[in-house]
Length: 256
Image (cartoon, rainbow, N blue to C red; front, top):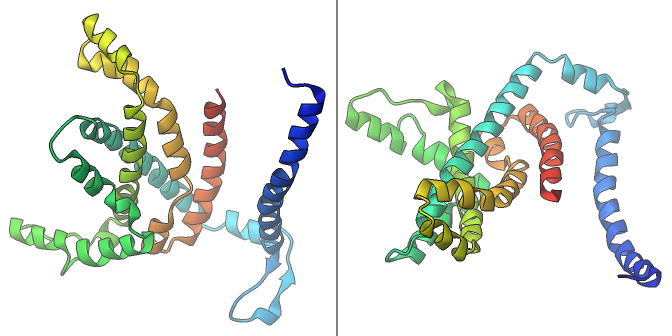
């Protein structure tokens, strides 16, 4: 058991790091709150002035507020669902002993290392372009009308881009977690007659609960790809608000 002296020493050693982290978090937050009470425009910077809560009133009464909130919730929920629901079986497949597994793993996680802006531009101009894009070419071969993704289904387009960007990351985290699973438990379950589905539900899935939480926690605050594609400033602001509350909920799960 730690003595009082060791506890004091430990707190003293942690104080500089905690203080630096506190300043690193509080100063940007305080500056953000301060700037949110000002009227400022880049076209006329001389008209800067204090307006109090007027910016918040304008924001909350903007007709686009509820639409942005709904789109953000759909975006967050869809990306997380696709990332987890596809990342889990993909990690299970990559965990199987097959020839060329290392090459397949490298190809699967490669999209995660593409810069978000580059990823957005590739999807927008090379894949989803209504005239010269790959999807338009496939639609022409099939004899159907090509979809103008960012005009007819912009939210779906952003969901696909962000999901493609984060699916490899989720797969990598879940694959790492699968490799740390106790093989003796799986062998014992197999000897007791448990099938593959039962083993997954009662052994593998609980083992992946914490890695899945980590994936959700990290993915919640990453919407650079969507911002680069759609340019939705209001949606990005709402995403940060939603992420704040979800991170608190997930943090409690990590502490459990």
